[in-house]
Image (cartoon, rainbow, N blue to C red):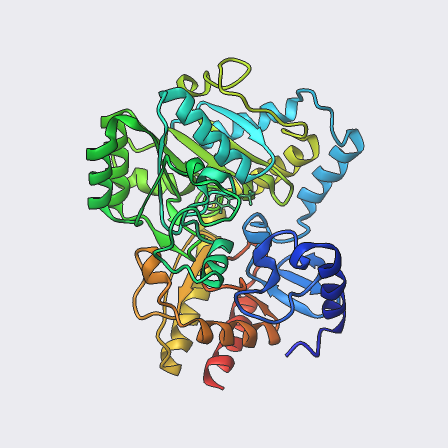
Length: 443
Ligand SMILES: *Cc1c(COP(=O)(O)O)cnc(C)c1O
């Protein structure tokens, strides 16, 4: 199956000699699906070309950031001109202010922003800030939600941690922590509950209410493919946090500016009066493909952060001038009227098309999407939690993945990862994708 990719195979061999597992982030290694990861050479619009010159329609989009597709001219122009001015100052710049102003204007309830370099850093800072601001220790998180790789959050996290847990014989009921090298005492204040379980959430507040600093969640859990927080669950997380003086930390690293201009929060705010996060964690799309992430919160919470307050946080490259230029240029494009309507329609066309061919082939299938983010499952019903996601027939998924890859369709190489459509995907790209999947399922 990899005979058509000799250069990728050779590069993977070379890489494995000098890079652990041959990759710089585990999911890239194709461990969940087997086979050789494609080494990428260039990209344009909705397409990727690998080292062997093979072209793919890209549904990973660098795991979320590339909402405009690759090589958007306005973004490239902004990056190029910023790079000529300076690669880094380690001093404040006007562009950081502009980006913070833009984010605050788009996110209800958020008044200040701290820019960092990765979602991991942003999430790590968010929990430190929540603990510092409340003077409490416990963090509530949910099974299958990934918040980056800070020690305290590596408990029943989704994404690349799933493969590790499966390989080590830990299933959905894995004991905490999910990574070696994290001492149990580091996660002793991390309480992990099933996603969408209102009763478990009520119970944990009844037991530990006055010691909980934060409830942290992905509003649409994209690291166990695509599982929405139910309206009831989100409303309850908001109400219990307020009632007990805990902070609600919404991790929108994946969903922010991906599912809607105001993030997933704006969707919940339609149904839950007065809904807003206490701390919002951002990344991926806000950097447009450059290393940039952020946390945002009301002033009352942010005043605890250094240099104003005692919660320490810093970064040599934070607010980098090239990354902020890339983020601002991306935000300008996605703020255009009608952007999300068009993107949603394109994503919907993909999901409907896939559902149609799966039904025709008699394959169990369910799918969901919002804005430019989608998930499909080889399950009859959309799962509501991690345990249900894990019931996926992994062999069937892997056959589908490799069949699609061989036909030039690059889906995420694991059943527990979400997919992404960009503004550069055309109806013809979507239809070609659906036709390829029909061939795989029918063959
Ligand atoms: C990707 C992701 C992170 C981690 O971001 P990195 O930039 O990879 O460190 C955190 N939370 C969520 C929800 C993510 O999808």
